[in-house]
Length: 458
Image 1 (spheres, one colour):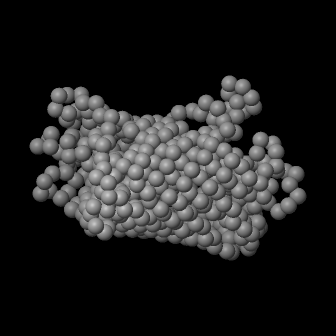
Image 2: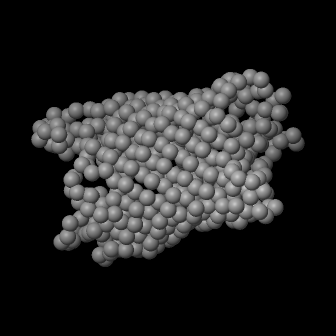
Image 3: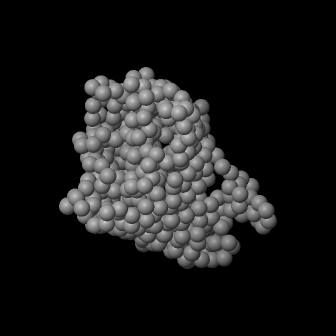
């Protein structure tokens, strides 16, 4: 029975990483005994981006004023390994780099020209590193399972996309606000702590207790509570709590690893609804007339995920829809401006009106307020016996209403996936918009970006 349980877990794990490819199988798995019940598995992936970006007003690139920029960069280079020598014990290690461009993303201190010039030789770091023990193994006719673990982990609750796999997005990437603590009180969407995960029939649950990474930003002293702006400053960090509960109406998903699939390409019948939270006491601070006030971080989300084959079976069509509502409270007027692989810096000699977010492709991404995000895609018909090359047009919409701004923003992403071998080898083209605020009460314009990604993972 133990062998059956372990082999079933390995199969589910392979399926969760191998959407849409009929040839991938179990991937790079190395058996440690003849039966294959003790093993180590490796997963490696690269995501290469080419971009044409309209820059925010007042941007410099390489010391020169610029309104547009074309470049190529390394969005993600990763290796993940996990191993079991018993159905109850598992170790997970995940290393890699992110966001290397021709000007930034290099090792700490890399500047100027030469062997350690700007953007060169980025430092590989741990994304995940945890140990896990199964208290109640999943078995036939027993609906309850429970595992506990500890370390640097990804069981961060809140939403499906907060714990999403970066291997099988439908859009070119996550919208980033799904990781609301990114690189402030977490380590690339992870915190150190303990977690519990499991299932009860069609219900899946994940909860964690974590010690957030310390933050120490100094709040600007305001003259009134209405103008105070909260910043990340946790001082002696308090424990955070996170959780996510999901009901799976049709097929059951694997929870062997935490990474939620973004698009199954019709290989499963999925309809899930879920809700989650993250809370951290005294995570931010404001200053009003010299008086410091602490604020808790309270984040909540509810989402729904649909991925279904449709039409005639021989046409292999599918639809994918995901929608999530985030309610974020980081304290008064909190806003974080972020830009993926941003190569722009502010031009101090600019005579026009710069954007509040800053230079390059920065935009207000995370803040106290409400975010609604929805994406949908359609896998076009294919009558070939082995559906290698597939096409999937998609679109996404983001509504953001932050307390810091009087106007809400409406953003769009439109694109197409060309699947050469499922998610294992694909090209993605996407056109995206972002808002440019020049004042609290003025959303001045929208800028755009065209992206092309080549992804391969094995």
